[in-house]
Amino acid sequence: MSTLREVLQTHVRDGSVPGAVALVARGDQVDVRAAGSTDADGSAPMAPDSVFRIASLTKPITAAAAMMLVEDGRIALDDPVTPWLPELASPMVVRTPESPVDDVVPAARPLTVLDLLTSRAGYGFPSDFSLPAVGPLFSELKQGPPQPQAVAAPDAWMAKLSRIPLLHQPGEAWLYNTCSDILGVLIARASGQSLPEFLAERLFEPLGMSDTGFAVPARKLDRFTSYYRAGEAGGFDVVDAPDGQWSSVPDFPSAAGGLVSTAGDWYAFGRMLLAGGTVGDHALLTPASVRQMTTDHLTPGQRKASALFTEGQGWGFGGSVDVERTAPWNVPGRYGWVGGTGTTAHIVPSSGTVAIMLTQVEMAGPQPPRTMRDFWSHVARR
Image: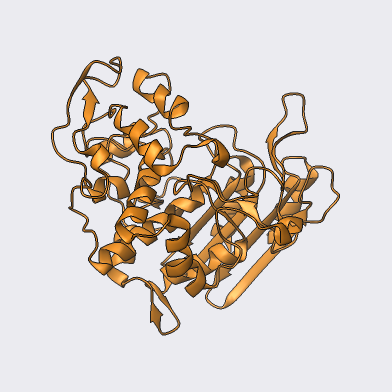
């Protein structure tokens, strides 16, 4: 059986990634390894505490923050979002998913907090990006690969969102990404704090996630990895350098994909979930909230309609949940997600496992690359 280090080194040697960090923990046994370099030039070795853009591994953290507000009594799952997001008081829906953006009907019911947590509010990416109502998500809201400095501030962003019709009626379909960003605005408005302030106070500081945030301070740039996409002629093209878009907190802190973090920090978050929401003697969440987060909420039809759920997954709050064993790494109840910047993390409650792999090469499409699949297989065999 290959060791964790060998799994990483295989992909560094074959040129799939310049470097990677992985962590696999079961109970008190933690194996963390680093391989390769933080950049394609090989000038700085990768280290266990290297900092990565974790992209959509932000989503489970956002969901946990929302559940804290539910437990505080500031919001409820069945609440309409209108008191905090008045821009969405009267949403319109395209008559059919293929309809032009001006062929609309009123939403059949108000959007709720639960709609946002389960990504079924009607906003987001379907399998077909060519649908007319999907275009404004890219052009107006700057959805897609994270580009934090290009996105408007929350109030302006919500004003733009209010002019974009829903693709489906609330509750009908699972759509990717946008609901998490809307949820981030709701968290800020309901808490009376900015999203970075709320996450720092309620999650990052109690969990000791000292390297997690929406920007990397200058004193930590030597640990910040470069971000690449695979070049058409081989090698890697730079998407963002360490002193680039994450060098300052953006106007719009993306709750869908804006965080930077380390393997150790995300492990602290995953370990909290495995412990039923507790850290030592301090409860951040109740076990009931964690169960809601890590339980599939989709119908079979909603799972089948998404190109992202081809290997037995459903969706909880902010992350996927394995519901069928259709691949070697599937374990019913496994909860986590992947990030488009080349990251993956999950927990397995049945075995007390937290597994994280961070790379800095953008995913080429919705299906996970071989680096992730090999890592998942390694975790499943341990």
